[in-house]
Image (cartoon, rainbow, N blue to C red; front, side):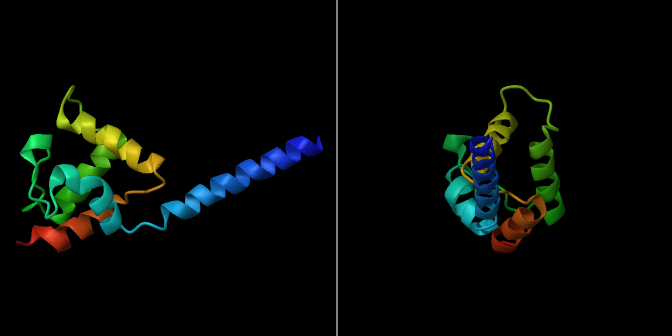
Length: 114
């Protein structure tokens, strides 16, 4: 019984640690580490990776796009959206958390007004 309590405590501690780590990354850090490979250093897009430009979208459009990706809202098969849904999972597995509204604000403020 003591072993089970210790194991449960360790699982809870690890879970809390993962949650704490998710808050350690800013949306800019997540973009730089995980998004710019396909969307470009300045959100200009990367045709070689089939990453569209994000420039010119409003904050609201960007936010809706990210929310739809998180919820699997796009019903296309074999598209870039499928890749992005997968990539969001990879981002989370690395202990990062994309906040759609904050990421949209970051992209729009940093790149969208050009």
